[in-house]
Image (cartoon, rainbow, N blue to C red; front, side):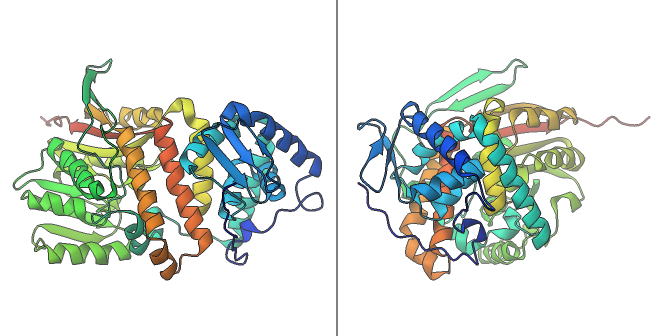
Length: 438
């Protein structure tokens, strides 16, 4: 049986991870038994093997993936009281482990998202968390504001880019959609990328965005938000005049220092504020930061791009896109992430993109590139980086629960890409000429 390290949970810091209760003040024991039996019956069809502390197990001996339950009673109680969120919190509490977390999540989450007996648990969990948020007051957990650069540096590469990378290999197959727009599908990298490949792959994705948007000498470019500086600097290196804005003081300092060190202060204008507050006209708008293109944010991107782009100007947008047929899985992961990672992590579905751009027909969609398998490798390499830098994470004050949480977050991202629930796109749109007044 796989070795399981002892868990360490500070319940004052992580109140949701306190031992779950049954019956009085908690979920009924009969409900736990029903959910436990349903889960055990589903294990073989999920292709899992579950091992228990007494050396018993469920599932085929040759199942390719396995879960080791350290605390079965707590695991099943959390499952019955919180559905997917309960299973994820159980992992954070150290009550179960797996040697292949993304593959386990790929098998688990669809069952968790669609099992009818868990609907009540899912609803009650959301209600409890909603009441707790109301009691605690509003919490600023915006992705740009809430995730410090020290954490980003622990799992990314030197670019500190947090969007999908594009690796060197992988065949490109071109086709056209029903409206005649170009669709390029990039297949998986020929060889599995290594951690040292990540920086070049991020720069490749950035360079492609800048190229399709036509950024060059004297281009007026908006990069909003700036990420951690890589994309606006690459635009400046092409001779563009770049404007960028951030709501994060942390990013303002980091990006400002990078711009100054690169000798590009004359080419990059950086300010504190919101994308919506930008004025003036631009030849190109380039966006790669995931938090700018959430389900809520994609409408803002379309509206502001229509207003800010000059005639013939281009919008190049890198965005994670959810499959409408997998909305249940995406919703389950979003619910957990909103509690622990970022309140604005709702990924836009394809229908959301269509809806957002339908309100701005003056933004003509030209085509897109799809490279979800490269995104899956990106998330895998982020997990590897974070694991290798575990001591650095501990030294910076990220406790064992937080480190398990972040591993789970990155594994869920990888599972979403690998399973086809989420894809990575680069979209190109152009601004149609404005009508002149007579």
